[in-house]
Image 1 (cartoon, protein in one colour):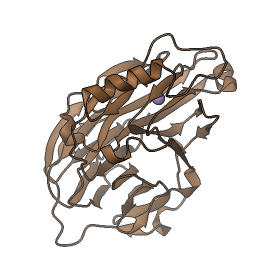
Image 2 (tube, rainbow, N blue to C red; image 1 turned 45 degrees about the vertical axis):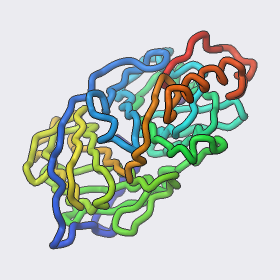
Image 3 (tube, protein in one colour; image 1 turned 90 degrees about the horizontal axis):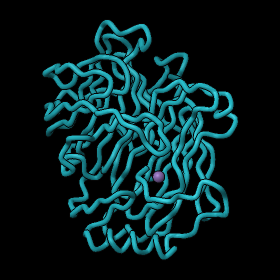
Length: 325
Ligand code: MN
């Protein structure tokens, strides 16, 4: 699992919980069902079965892979539109190319994040590059959908390419956890991502037996998705493993502990930790559009059909039907 790693974790700033901290209790643990996205890459639907009010300001989270592709096999998505929210794509292993109808796009690989504000509307395509299709190889990443409040749903589309080298790196108090801050901040240490509403996104790697006590703003929700390994959440020490989402209750500290014994294929526990200030507006979500009302979603489908979200550049692979992704 490359993402960003460091040789000596002990030189990083140490993050611990204050003596007066209040560990968040575990509210629910759910297991992500597996499915396929776009042209057929395997995903785990991290938020499936969780009330959207508990996820606010987030909408959707897919763990893409981890999958080892044979030559000729890597899959992407066809051209598709979005409106009303942001897609955040974090690549742990492998390479992803992105293109849109405005001529924007780029390539992200190990540890990079692309933060796309769809805003009023955009058409885009996400695919592995041709040479990876030829060679095959490992692919593992995340796509997170972040909602926008009504006041920002009509903002112009925008991108942030967040490079792996810009991620803020921290260590836990016990030196056993590498904390990568992608966006938002932990104890004043800021990640490179700019967010439209207050949000923090972290990828943490825990050595076997390590305990992470992560300060977390009390007014944010708190979600921990285990992407590899085995461990425990909360001071209750509820067991979790790869593919499980923990929703935490109130408090100001997130507690995660890696099991003493891990499997050889994944010798560490890896978690994606996310939360933000809830937007608390009605959510009308259908396919690739996330608006406040059903009428606005129907309008988005109509605008897409009329070409108002842009037109697909003259290339092969034109979509015949709308797909999520
Ligand atoms: Mn998309």
